Image (cartoon, rainbow, N blue to C red):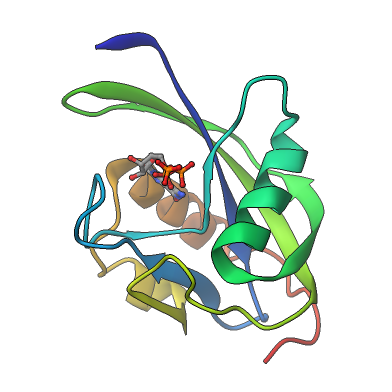
Length: 140
Ligand SMILES: Nc1nc2c([nH]c(=O)n2[C@@H]2O[C@H](COP(=O)(O)OP(=O)(O)OP(=O)(O)O)[C@@H](O)[C@H]2O)c(=O)[nH]1
């Protein structure tokens, strides 16, 4: 097991009512699981730069980081993940599923029932308990 752990960022994007989530391709690790868009940080890259790069690569959107949320560390069978969530706002483009099986907008109650990884379940629980991240304006 990689003791250092994998540093992964993810974006929480909300239209005030629903949250944006993506389903991983079957062939990838955690295939078929739902996740918040993002990915591994490259060496020397700032977390806030990594999240913007990943969303651009995966969804062809530009985002503004509004706030960094509390990180989550989870041990899976073969690796440890340090998940760094960022509350983000889309400032350019509409999400396209360039690397995911499916993408969509879901209410928090729906997210709580979907098949997310353990790290994400912790995050969803936190958002639910906090009563949601504040609405972030106009999105379709
Ligand atoms: N993107 C993302 N990955 C997550 C989340 N939660 C979580 O456990 N992970 C896990 O973090 C690991 C790395 O994410 P990733 O595979 O998206 O990273 P990446 O796009 O940079 O990888 P790649 O370049 O190999 O495709 C995966 O095992 C993934 O399941 C999440 O909310 N978003």
